[in-house]
Amino acid sequence: MRRRIAALVLMIVLCLSALVGCTSAKTKQERRVIGTCAGYDVRYEELRYLTLTYKELFEDTYGEGIWEDPVTAEKYRAELEETVWDLLLNNYAVLATCDQYLPKKNAIEDEAITEAVDGMIEEMIASYGSKKEYRKALEAYHTTESFLRFTFAVAQLENELIYALSDDWELMINDLSDFEAWLREGNCVYVQHVFIRNDPGEDVEENRAKAAKVRLDLIGAENAEQINSIIGAGLNEDLQPSPYYVVTGVYVPEIENAAFALDYVGDVSHVAETEDGFYVLVRMEDSPETLLSKITALFSDYQATVAEDYVEKTKETLEIELNEYGLSLDLLEIE
Image (cartoon, rainbow, N blue to C red; front, side, top):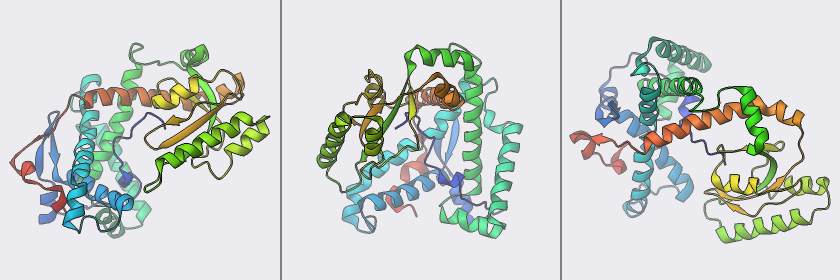
């Protein structure tokens, strides 16, 4: 629902291992360069991680065994290739944006970044209890220590990018009091919602009808208690623990447009259709104290979103220049 887009769907940040000191032939293969992007080498290990991860996700969506049958494998080839090659640009979009706005070029090699990554790796090893278990987790998630380190470094640089952009008022609001004033000028709306998700295999039009029915129920609610009862019903597939603020530019346009069209407390939005499903929003009652209690988190979300917008703009200008080896690869054959 937020407009923010994570650099990658990299769950390895949460639960992976390291391949400390390994120099096997397999590791040499994984470190092989397949091309360049924004002046940085792109390695096979990153392509392999994305390919195998999304093959598994596609099986969750379209059915187990789709890659084992040549017919169904070809059916989903184009979607897999489009997804993987697009996601492969993300880390390099961050690096290219950092090269533009950070004072030091090629900051991924900075000593402070390396030390921070070392600390993250040590914490991860400790969480597994041993390097052996750590390595098992790495293999299970189709990755390598070098790619894990690269991913951690990019994440650190994203934080550095936020700091760099916040130094320039023309690039983003950089003061909390100024941000509060901007919000109070009409750049936030306090809402709650009902969400109907379009899960694989579900009838989209049926879900649209469910959302329309919920909207009518909300319009017919006579008080806040009835509204909260409808929002808290089992039909809602994305229940927020409490109302929240939609801030200008932080949420997808469909949600933002629906939220800012709400004129008064209790006003119900149209059915807003997003990539994931349907939202119906209700404007909730807030107060100056409510806004102040949430403003630090809102400011963090705002700054992160602005930074990611700069990254997305950079990404639109990038492409991966594959070498001969990269051009020879078939995603369906990667194991």
